Image (spheres, rainbow, N blue to C red):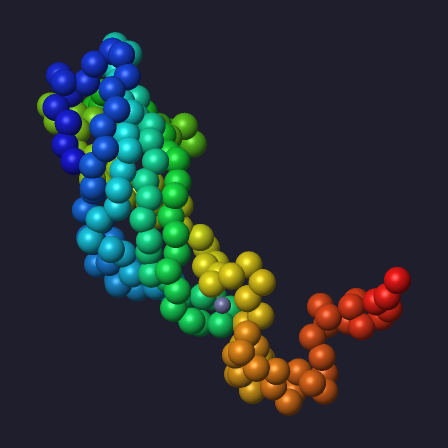
Length: 178
Ligand SMILES: [Zn+2]
Ligand SMILES: [Zn+2]
């Protein structure tokens, strides 16, 4: 999605569109340890306005991304529904960038220097920021047995029967009854 800077009004304007994000597949294919599989596009609802030369954007995106569980390695569909916001300020085009780059990330500020704002890289950046560092198919995924590699979500393997899961020790000591 591209928006001409001159078309950005002072009072907030809301639009919704589908943003193509399949480029992320190439980015992640290049040497990331984690693998995600991105759909062709995500649904985005965006509100934008200006205050002087500063451009404000906030919105949310929704969609499903394919991921591999970091515990059991199973592929699953990761539901994304995230809010985001960023501010664009005119590029001061000064050579001393070091300090600015630093504060830039903290404040969610980016520079623009063109007549038209290309939202695509900005939204893809937000998607990357929203990705979990350790994707899980379920909060309580039991993972693979460190001994035999069995998927503990589906079966109790022989080694877990003998050594036991330390997390379950608490339950074993509790007497259930009334
Ligand atoms: Zn899992
Ligand atoms: Zn095992």
